[in-house]
Image (cartoon, rainbow, N blue to C red; front, side, top):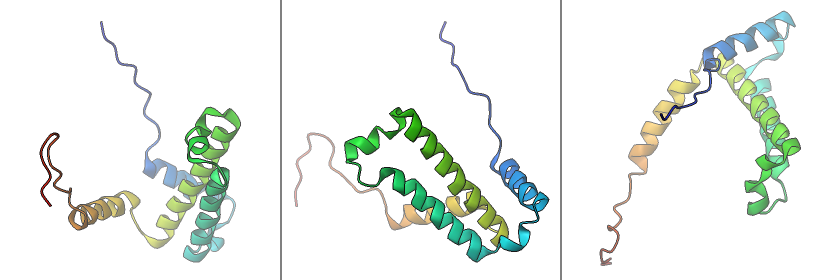
Length: 125
């Protein structure tokens, strides 16, 4: 019998967004959560994610998640980037999933799948 192990569903993006709104409200941080401040914080956190990989070779970078300390740092920085992105989206009224879907559609039109010859087929320039 071939059983599939599935992880329990995590929180939705909307649930996380609402938790972040409540977190900031409970601490009276809303006045500081302006689009400019949130965009700045997002950039800082993205830089901290990049810092983990600074000066690593491609091989070392590919193995970062095998090191428990570095993997923990990566997960924390990813969480920080996502948190600030969600807070920024809330501040400017952007649904990030709708924005991403629209961007993918535009990119599919801008960058169509190239016509590559089938394997073994001769290429004629």
